[in-house]
Image 1 (cartoon, chains in turn brown, orange):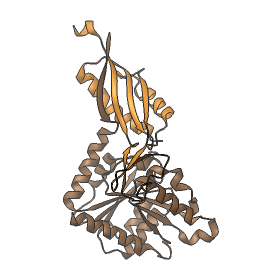
Image 2 (image 1 turned 120 degrees about the horizontal axis):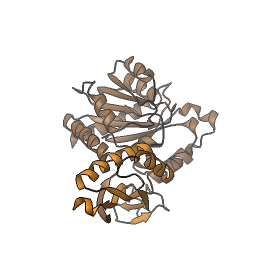
Image 3 (image 1 turned 45 degrees about the horizontal axis):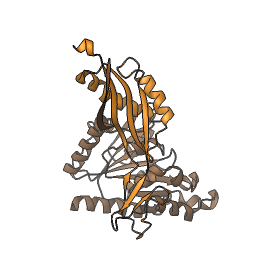
Image 4 (image 1 turned 30 degrees about the vertical axis):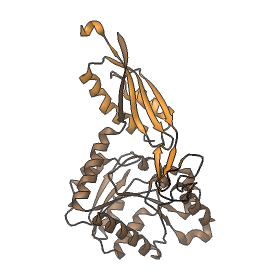
Amino acid sequence: MKTRRVSIVKSVMAADEVFARSLRDEMARRNILLLNLIGSPGAGKTTLLEETFKRCGFRSAVIEGDVATARDAERIAACGVPVVQINTRGGCHLEANLVSKALETISLEGLDVLFIENVGNLVCPSEFDLGEDYKVAICSTAEGADKPLKYPHLFHLCGAVVLTKKDLVPYVRFDRELFWKDVESLNGKASRIEVDSLSGEGITDWVRQVERWLDKKRDN
Amino acid sequence: MHEMSLVEAMMESLVPLCSSSGWDRVETVVLRVGALRQVVPEALVFCFETASAGTPLEGASLDIKEIPLRQSCRSCGEKWGGDQPLGRCPCCGSVETETVSGLELEIESLEVAVDENEKG
């Protein structure tokens, strides 16, 4: 038996990255903006989407990632937006191969924006490339202002941070200044948006951000 | 806990590579893991031991090299490490920063064993 060292330099996730690349290529070809929404369970990801669809002019579709149930997909479908639910059955994140498979059941014809609502989790989903143009970090005031520094990977890589449930600030002792200071220390480029989805406050700022990304993608 | 997904992806590329290259066994897998990646080494080793059973990678050791975080400024070219804020250049204040290293998740090399007699 003889041993030798072989140099290979290959991404650990090479197999899934093939799917991510092909998703990115397809979205580029069709001029569709792909956004990967990541946040804790209960951060308000689905509610943000529901309110977005009441106010936006762009044509959307949604891929919903959840461990179990089709509840989120039912809420999105009630908005009249095409949606496909992925149940990961215990999996803590979506992977590009799952998204590719889900897209076989949805028409991309004439779409402007495809939203992926990832499994509720601040850690694992940010590790997997889904071919998105931007990751969006969604964090609610009730979770506490310390989340950016505790979960730096997502906040460092995202294109925008949406702070939800701003109406709860008087009740949950949320240090807004600290939150945004920590976001900036990790990512000076990310857009910073505050919303109260229930009253609709701030939703227009979010919709405008999506439109800016869409314009930018279509100009290039 | 996404380490099992990482290990499964790794197996998916390494097991076929072993058979196509004629390696009988892999003794060591050297990984480069960036400081910003959320990978727990103990979990990765545990998942690897489980997933490699019955493959040419069974019993191989995982050598995990942590790659430190390095940022650089697109505006002035300044370079700095993880002790400074990542999002803003400490020299010129620009937010046009990029991560030069610290996001790696790569297989760097393998130590493989080939049975000389068997292969003639």
